[in-house]
Every structure is written in structure tokens, then in C-alpha cells.
Amino acid sequence: MDEEQPDVAPVVEATADDIATMEIRGAAAIGDAAAEALAIQAERSDASTPTAFRDQLRAAARELYETRPTAVSLPNALRYVLRGIEGETVPELRESTIEQAREFQADLEQAQERLGEVGANRLRDGDVVMTHCHSTDALSCVEAALDAGKHVEAIVKETRPRKQGHITAEQLREWDVPVTLVVDNAARRYLDDADHVLVGADSIAADGSVINKIGTSGLAVNARERGVPVMVAAQTIKLHPDTMTGHTVEIEMRDESEVLSETEYADITGGDRADDGLTVENPAFDVTPPRHVDAIVTERGQFPPESIVTLMRELFGETTGEPWEV
Ligand SMILES: O=P(O)(O)OC[C@H]1O[C@H](OP(=O)(O)O)[C@H](O)[C@@H]1O
Image 1 (cartoon, rainbow, N blue to C red):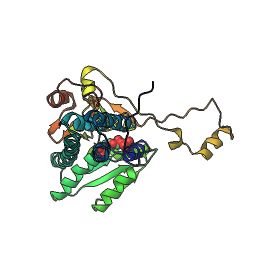
Image 2: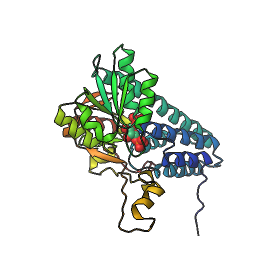
Image 3: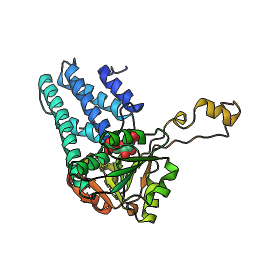
Image 4: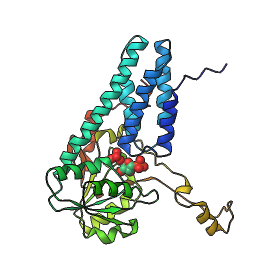
């Protein structure tokens, strides 16, 4: 007999869809949205028993989890909320879920602010940062430096295929930071004008590897060659606990349509959609080894990448498992 699927609020499905299509994007924003969706699921739950309530929440968590595989802020957010829930009755569980989600969201905001202050210490008055993609953690370092009265300029990489560099440029211009926008291929040339490479992270592995937007690793190699320090801004929810037990981080492969439009595809294949000889690969992230990273800046201070595992153990212990296994 088929078991009945627990009811998941439509808002959870909508959030999952927005994460998958990148309407909601950026590791911190994804974690925040996931916590919010669980809070709304709890608020709107029609469960009549505590077991049914928990089943619904677990189903919601699964749906959110299955959207994008690389940013660990998503499972970390789900774990934080689900593991903190207490109560014997449905109203108690409801209240506790909402409280946990709000606590997570508040911590997230505070952590980013604190991280910004830590990261700003690395930026001197007059420094030029080169950015890749759009990271709110990275930008919080610039914001804090500006608040401290420092002048900062930026070389912003466009970041193909989705050009999130434009979002970075927009934010920096709002803050009146002079911006030079360059295509990704021009990065090496402009590294000579940069004092720092400043990027965010979707996940940090136990060995200090940084998983971030595709193109970060090449940029870091070039920066090392040019003697430009690489600074990674990542709140501790970007630390990937599974990597402490040897798991690797899955790299999301996205649709080829982000790389080639239908017309471009047709131009290459002469109109043949079913050309087996043409493969388009679109990995969203890559892995930068710790030897190419100078510092990981978190709300708990800055760390050489090789020592990040100490902080991971302190924060997560050795526990792993799927977020809904509580
Ligand atoms: O959490 P914050 O610092 O905002 O962003 C962290 C990272 O998330 C983004 O991924 P995507 O654009 O969601 O694929 C970028 O790779 C960025 O560096």
C-alpha cells in the first residue's frame, strides 16, 4: 500500500523552485530562504499529531535540500532548524520551529556583519580588490572598510555564464566605489592593478579547499603567480561538516542553455539539435586548493585554510548525516 505523502506548504515548493532556478541565489541567501520556508511550513501546518508535524517538516526539508547540491549553507540551515526543535504538542513544535528559524536568520545576519569587520582589517586605505561572482560575505568586508573611512576600488569580473559580476558592480556603485568591469578572460591582465582577490564561498572543505563559482581556482592560481593575496570571505555556515569524514563536495552541473542560446547552438550545429558530436558542459563551481588561498575570513576570525578543520570540529563535532535525520 502506498504511504500518503506528508503535506508540504506551497510556499516550500515555491522557495525550492526559486532556489533551483537561481531566483534566490548566493549561499547565505539560500540558507536564509530555507529557514524561512521551514518557518512558514510550521506556521501553516495542518498536522493533527506531533508525528505528522515532524513528517511534514522533514518532507519540506528534503524538497528544499534537493534543489542545489553545492552550497552547504542549505543543509546547514535545515539541520540547525530541525535539530533545535523541541516540544510535545503541535503548538509547541510549531512555536519552536519558528523560533529556531528566526534564531538562525538573526545569527546569519550578525555573522555576516562581524565577518565584514574582520575582513575589513585586511583592506588598507586605497586598496583595489578583484572580485569574482557576487558574494554578500565578500561585499560585507568592503562595506565595513568603507564604514571605517577607507577608500576602496574594485575590478569586477563579469563571471560567465550568468554574469553575477553585474550584481556586484551594482552594489559597489551604490556605495560609490569606483568599479572597473572586465570580462573573465581579462582577469590576469588586471591582476597587476589589484591588491587582493576577494571572493566568497559556497562550501569550505576540511582540508581548506574552497568551493566557489567556476573560475575561482584559475583566478587564484594566477593571483598566486602575480603575488596577489587571495582572501575568501565565508561565514561558518559555509563549512562543510561531511568533508571531515572524507566526503567530497558535489559540484552542480547546470543546464547548457546558460552557456549557449538555441540560436547559437543552431549556428554551431547547422540547425541540428540532435548533434551527438557537440557537448556543452556547465559546471557551476570549482575547487581551489588551500595552497592558493591566503586567508579564510569568518565571523570567528581569519584562518589559514589548512587550520580551518579545527574550527569545523569545534562547531560541528564529528556528526554528519542528512539534515532530516534527527
Ligand atoms: O553567501 P554569499 O557570500 O552571498 O555567496 C557565496 C557564493 O554563492 C554564489 O553562488 P551562486 O551564485 O548561488 O551559484 C557565489 O559562488 C558566491 O561566491
